Length: 113
Length: 111
Image 1 (cartoon, rainbow over the protein chains, first blue to last red):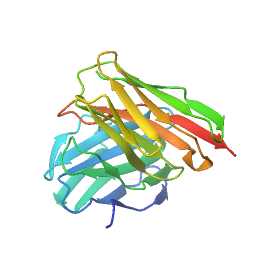
Image 2: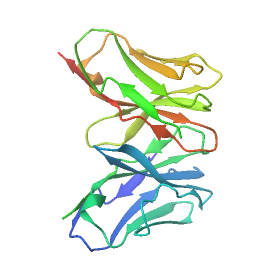
Image 3: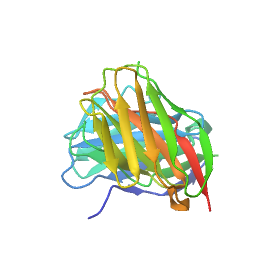
């Protein structure tokens, strides 16, 4: 049974470039979450979707960040243009419903030079 | 705004010891509380979920308790093993709001 799949696992790019992170949730899960983890701030929710619809994007830092969920099996988080302060580990998680246990992917380690 | 605090930030114990990790939250109106484990370079693995109406949950050597009125939870690990070394995170869910995480306790169990 495949878990949450994220790609790429690592991304190194120069500031100003567009970055796209991808997530495939567990089949049958209705809720999908994007988190960012840094040493300073810990794990922070960026946005979450329920049935492919964005419910709460108040954690998205600024307009440079955008997220989409075109269907139940795929979501993207895009940063354009990227900045060094965006460097972090980005996690995707899914759950059956918003209040059920969340299953996490292994994350994307993003470094913006 | 819900805030979750975990103490201590790091803990080192010899193998075989029983230990307790602490979690506190500022708003007691929670729906459930979860404990997660995170290994280096990996995502989070859910260990235990306690509904607001429950007092504790057990899984193997792990026992999590919840005192909602005082805004506290503890994770008890019995007979610790080197394989238990990881970061343990506590998170609370207030119904329709997403999980709010603590910054975790980094545990090292020394053989």
